[in-house]
Length: 93
Image (cartoon, rainbow, N blue to C red; front, side):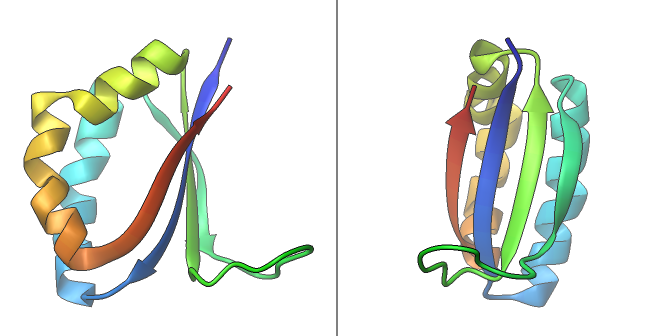
């Protein structure tokens, strides 16, 4: 069953965000992840959401999604991500 990594984020540092995106994108592809969508939130239909961006990445299954996240390649870019973004990453099956 496909799994989706859903990321809610607010950019803290635009330059670091560009650096992170340039590094993270190829790592997602190398792990057979597919960017479904990403951009600014347009509206909140129910509840509260304070973050400004949302990204959804599709993987073959939860193991593949967790394999990408826990890979040495992705773990190496997390310090840049943390400088660039305030974020939450979740996996949905």
